[in-house]
Each structure stands twice: as C-alpha cells, then as structure tokens.
Length: 449
Image 1 (cartoon, rainbow, N blue to C red):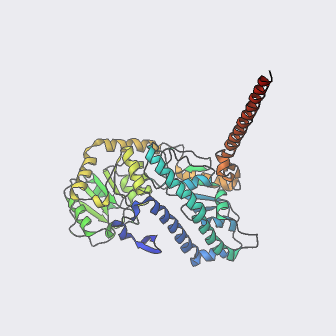
Image 2 (tube, rainbow, N blue to C red):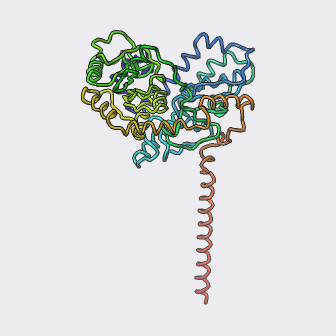
C-alpha cells in the first residue's frame, strides 16, 4: 500500500517510519501539488469515472467534491451545469480563503503546513509570510495551470458544444459553499465568509454497543484503558521491529489495559494486559468511561473524536497535518507530543505515566469536550442544511462576495493608496514650484527697489 508520490513513484507507507523528507515545509508544499496532480489524473482516467463523464442525460441538483488539491474535479460542476459545494477534511488553507473571497491575514493566521498559533514572533511571521508567498505564487503560476491542463485534456473529449471550457481558476470562484473540518477549540479563530461553514465532528455518531469480548475487556479494566491506533493508512504492522518491541515492553509494565489496533497476526509475545485488534471501532472505544488515554498519530478525525469524548492524547505525528494538530493539542493542554524517532522505553513510559498521573490533562480534555459539543445544532445536520439550502436557492449566489473578482491591488486598495500618494507627491511638487517662483519674484522686486 502507498500513500504519497515522490519523484514520480508511489512511496510505501512503511517508508514514512524512516523518512525525514516530511520535515521541510517547502518540500511538503511541492509534494502536495504533485500528489494533487497525480491523484487527480489517476482518478479521472479511471474507467468508471470516464464512463460517468460520458453521460449526457444525467441531471444533478448539487455536486459535492473534496477540497484537497483536486481542482480539476470542479469541472464536473460545468459538465452537469450544477452548483457545487466542497468539503475540506484537512481544515482551512489560504487557497480556500481566496476561493471564497478572502485574503488570509498572514500576521496572525499561520500557513496550513505550520504548527504556529495566532501569536507569532517576528521570525515566525516572516517565515509564515515567505511560505505563504511561495504557495500563492507557485499555485498561480504552476499548480493551477497544470490542473487546468488536466481538466481540459479529460473533459474536452466529452464537451457538448457549449463553448470553450471554463478555467479551473474561474470554477474555484463559483464554489457555492465550503464545509470545513475545523473548530476554534483546535484551530484559532480567523476571518471567514458566510459560505464557509465549520463542521468539525460531523463524522462522530452516538456510540454503538461494543463487541462482547471488547466490552468485557474494557469494563473489567480496574486501572483504566489505553487505546493505541495510528489510523487507517499508517499501519502499526509496518513499523520497524525494534519499535514494536519497545512499545510492547512498555505496555507490559503498565497496570492499565491496552487496546492496540495492529493490522496483522505476526505480533508475538503480547502481554496479558494488551488486546490486539486488526480493526477497532475507534469512536465507540473512546466513548467508553474507562478510557483514560489515546495514543494517536494525530490525524484530524481522531483528534476531534478524542476532543469530543474528552480523552487526553499522546500524539506521535509523522507528516501532513499531524505535527500541526499535535502542537495545537499540546498548547491546549490536553495532549503531549512524542516523535517516532524519539521513542524509547524510557521516553514512552515516562510520557504515558505523566499523562495518567497528572490530572491536568484529563481535566483539560473534559473542559475542551464541553466547549466542542456546545453547538447550536449537530454538525452533520448543519452540513445537510447547507447542501439543501444551496439546492433550494439554485446555487445561492447571494452568499458569494464579489471579492473573488477583485485583484490583490483592488482588494487591499493599493490602487487607491497609490493614487493618493501620487496626488500628494504632485501637490507637493506644485507647491514647491509655486513657492520657488514666489521667492524668485520677491528677490527680483527687492533688487529693483
């Protein structure tokens, strides 16, 4: 199984455990662009998708698309002449702001790849500005034109004589609304538009009954339960043997019971207090009253589940948004961060003990849970409402600000400021010339007298 592209090749998930390539923000940015282009092409060239594009008589009231570096897919809105809503599972990004008529204020809103908060030092603001500028320029001059070429290549084959295809850039401006997997308890407040809706936690459902053996294992945990999972893609079964041994050795020292989502059956010497599951109902487990700690890779969905249920988290981040989510959890007081390469028996054991014995982590997690759950309505219901709203109102164009059509100069009033400066300078020059002329006349009259 592979997850990302590197120099044109798919990288096995197991390589993430040893790779250092994800430490450079600029490389990660280019990697996202490459990933977006290659996954977009891979999907659009799929035979089922091609068959879908060929359809001529289908009618849709709404198209819902992923908002993650697949801009060529916006062409489906043109293909079927339907309004489009996008869903961002990764939270906010500058390019999402621009698509909805906002320019991100880099002075207090960090780039999506950075783990800064809204109180940045001078260096952090400078670095944030540099990275954001590279993102903005590279996206406009390289990435979006490449997505546009891809969209034209795929969809022009099936164009229905409705004139030239619109550009991806123009289609971005036509997005009716964005449903964003974000909440101010994790991501600090930022400027927004009416069509940008926070729906963090929409995937969280009321807990279901656990399998009988799992329920009994957790109910009988006198000292509590620790749940360990690295998510759906970054599989524990692919980690180096050395780290597996360290983790099992630490778990064996604990009084608590441990549930480890481990995807194969080749794990040996499993301690009696550890239960191995190839798959585990994560949300239902975290909802159990005896869960006292979640050891996670820091994915956004798991992060919101732990916040929802008030479970403190030990985060072992690897790439993408995981370091950012970990840093935010640490700042919020309900999480600790441990690098995978830094895992030793001592470091892992000490971090677990600190989080179990220091009641501040659990207290803070429960406080955040109260705030996270305090909503006017369920986020899934809110998502459905906005989808139906856009359909009822034929794209709800009244939600979209004309700011999407302004240039940077117009948006920031640089043209107005420039004109004001020019007028000021011209007036200054005129006054200086006039004053100089009057002085000369005055001197001439004095000489005559």
